[in-house]
Amino acid sequence: MFNYYIIELNTEHKIGMVLKEKLESLSTHYRILLETQKMTASMIFQSTVQMPEVIEIMSEASSSTKNEKAHLRARLHNLLYKKYNIIKQKGVLQYHFVLPNNESFYRAHKPDKFGDDLTNIRSDFKYVNETHRPTRGFVQGRTAHGFRNAFPLFDKNYKYIGAVEVSFSSDRFQWYMNNISNIHSHFIVDKSIFNTKAWKRDDLVLKYEQSAESKEHMITLGNTHDKNKCVTENRVKLLPIKDEIVTKLKLSLPFSNYVEYRGNVTVVSFLPIMNVQDKAVAWTISYVDSPIIHDTLLSSIILKLLSLLITLLITYFLVKQIFSQHKLEEKNQAIEEQKEKLQRQHQYLNEILNSTDNIMFITDFKDVKYSNNMFKNMLKVKQTEIFNQTSRHNLLSIFINIHGYLHSGLLEEGEDFMSLIKRTPVKDRVVSILDNNSNPKAFQISVTNSENSGDYLVSLSDITKIKEYQVLTEQKAYIDGLTNVYNRNKLNEIFAQEIKNSKRYKTPLTIAILDIDKFKDFNDTYGHLIGDEVLITMAQTVQHNIRETDTFARWGGEEFVILFINTTLAVAKSVSEKLKNTIEQNTHDKAGKITSSFGLTQYIENDTQKSMFERCDRALYKAKENGRNRVEIL
Image (tube, rainbow, N blue to C red; front, side):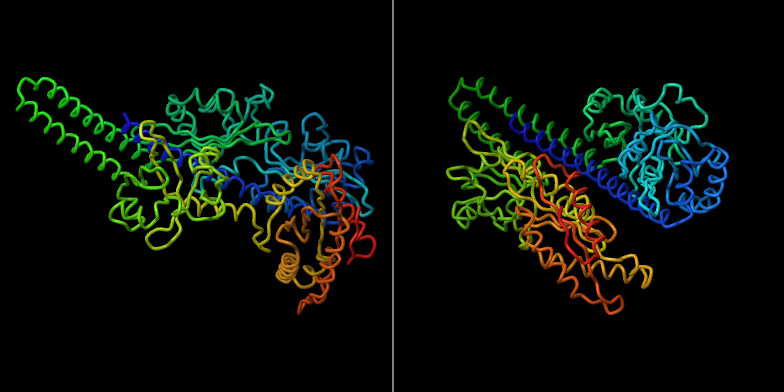
């Protein structure tokens, strides 16, 4: 039974690692694509508001008569239809202008459809027209859904004149996953976000079919997918795990599972897509064949059969010993046979443990009582006794003291290593060991307690490549590619945590927004390459002149944000003045002198990220109005 448990534990562990890796891969590619589309939408919006005639048309449209609107709409169409044909190549589904009263004024994809009231249909337009702030997210429209980006429009006097939408369809996501990331995936949508009659309409931008994964969801079929494979075949393939899928979909959390079908094992990963109300109304699903899980399951069966065979052999010889006690000679012979078989059992156990890729050993976390060949090869020892001597009977000495890994330095007074493992979440139970070439390797550690002897069976699974992939993924997700400082995603995570800390411990928290004065002039005069050099220079200057405990990130364009942790507004203002003066000393050999403006604010009771950022943004605007190259606080 102990052998069987070891085999089962090792099998479950390997499968769990594969499922986790596939889900993280899907999530990473999804986040990268979502961020890319957000940047594309922002660039399209910026290029739109730089067209004076577009602003002029939208400014006049709200107060115009029906005939005047028709004339204005025709002008807008002549201005933008070529632009729309270009941005469609970047995956844009809708380029849509709406008046402040939520009236649709111009749809680039359907120029002849206008004038309808979108108040109760498009929550994103309603939000932008009420708050005059941009919003992004998955939103259902009248006949189609999409990843929508809605931006406010202002005239040259900062009067609000309406909103513009740049949205992308889920079909674009599916094309990217399948053709660029080489991840077979598709997209399903909750039926409840549609009017029931809408599924049969012929004018839908996206075509829908009943999904194979859930009767409550519809699959969007574009040019990327085949109905027979994505619906008919998958419906049969998922039958063994259908109930589990339905249960997990209700939780609105990411998950992965595997299914065996026609001799292959497929990992099916589900990633929830949230709308602007943070509700999972759609899912992106990937199907990836896994030879690793297939081979793991096959190896598990073989090892279990071998273990059963060993148990039967031992049982047989024990029974034979009982019935051979009639004669002393037969009894002695039976005893000898039993010894031989026990030796074989030990040999078989060795073969089982040595057949795994994992490092396995039995220990009391001081001495190693037994180890497989992977352990000996890793530490370059021939016998465990030699290891015990060289380690001075301290097994924990092989675990390197590195941040993010378990080691003896984390033990509290009087605590043993097993207690440390138990209080550590399963996903964080990782140790690092130097291999026989003195290179650090990462291992997932699993420990099973032996109730009889008080020793522990330890299994170490090599996850070095997975850890390296996680680091690379985090860099892609959290580091700005141009300036090499944190991006908006990382800032939002840290900002949310620091607000919680300020609320709980009553510690000060100050935020600064800064940007380069007249940065557009740099780009217009010298080109974007010079503009990029200016951005990099300023980012390096700030990064090298703030504390390690503070957080510096690029918010977007020429805007940057500093979180002054545990710092009052007065101290942060003094630091910002020094930063401003240091930046001013930088002179680009072509662009010349560089100056910057700062807006600062401090956390006050009941503040949120949004309220602090809005107040800080107003402080930056004040700095711009008062002449630039200065620091203002609110």
